[in-house]
Image 1 (cartoon, rainbow, N blue to C red):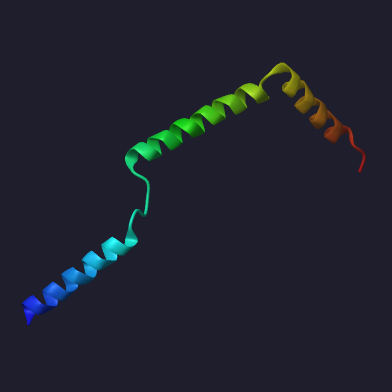
Image 2 (tube, one colour):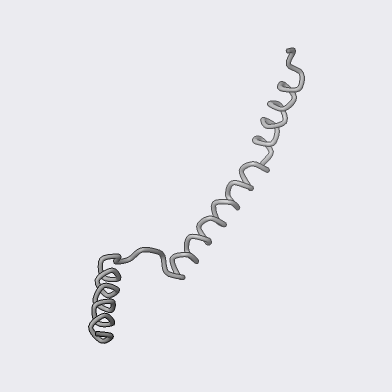
Length: 69
């Protein structure tokens, strides 16, 4: 009885693993995702801290603070 139950459980687990397929990313995919996110953050930082964008952001903040309510 024990062997039959064990064999049945093993078959169920194997079938579940086969049906699941590729459920997630591997370590190299995580690494590439992190590199891409960091590269995007660097580009965004450079754009936001550039002279023209910085002046525009300051102008927006000044207009918002000077607005009458």
